[in-house]
Image 1 (cartoon, chains in turn brown, orange):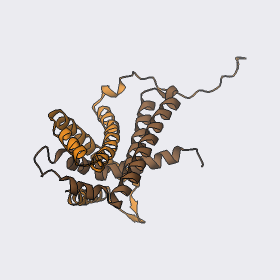
Image 2 (tube, chains in turn orange, cyan):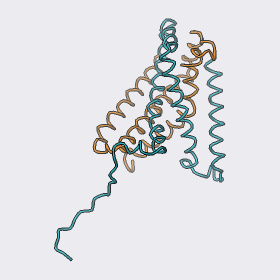
Image 3 (cartoon, helix red, strand yellow):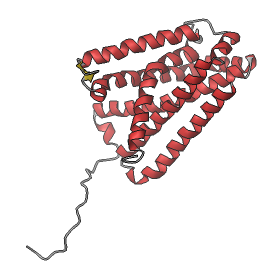
Image 4 (cartoon, rainbow over the protein chains, first blue to last red):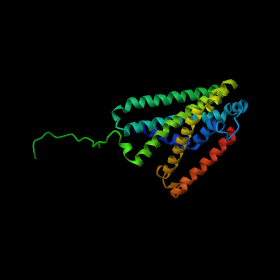
Length: 114
Length: 133
């Protein structure tokens, strides 16, 4: 690829940023806050299971989770560079993107075994 | 001309204190925007944890729900919500610069592009509420 993995990293960053912007506030509100804050009744287990075991949810999982993690890895790496830690760019990138890949594997494995 | 050895050019690096980002309000907002990515990663992992708890059966799911009800966890998730909302706002504000002024070959006003993204966001959020509730 021309210019190495840089264009791909930026592409994943942009795609992840857009997906995160669109779905994450609603997900945090729905899954973590709606019931504890009394905004809605808690979702009973059978209803939650019906959603989670649906093919659409599994597909969403393997899209949202990897893109979100790659978005974060790219942005944290860029922040490291801005804070004058450019000499450590390669090891930091290795750690960040290994983490993103581990999370991606976790999400894919989960989607396949739900 | 002197006979000094030719010097190889080096890129100019502006020297800044390590805390440069704290010296100006707009830079602090920039830092907060970048930090939202850590919260994005947290919610991504949490989504998998939630799915696994549901799949593991009613007991594991009740455990997850009970955990979200702990006061400290509620407070933490309010911080997470604020962070991902800040991500959404700053992301949409940047769209006219990132995507450009032309959509499908037509000139679009920057404000219209931002407004369009907010409309899409509301539609997606409503759809998620309808599906997950």
